[in-house]
Length: 124
Image (cartoon, rainbow, N blue to C red; front, side, top):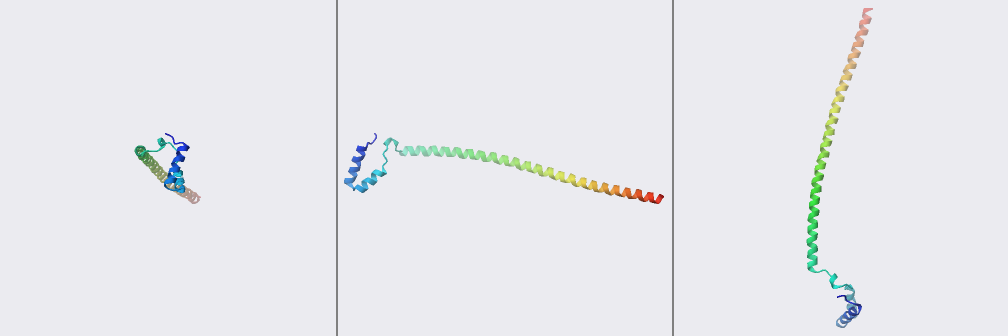
């Protein structure tokens, strides 16, 4: 049942006779003008606590699943980086082999050219 202003005034006056005007005003200010059906009971609070715990458990399960998924994704990225590292090492080895071949070919060509030049000078 809603409390109307006349009832609130009667309650305030009763507190004033029992205590004093200042305390009566303080008490009335601390009591908002709401219906008693809007006040939460212990059962309401307990139900809300159970619902909150259930939602928290769901959230934890989702976070656990997300963490596992992220762990798997990071493992895949780690493997990709390892593959790139191996390919770069292979490329480096190929480059070193090509450099060695180029230097040796240059030395061979230079030696052959000098040998041919010396042979031509010696034959003249």
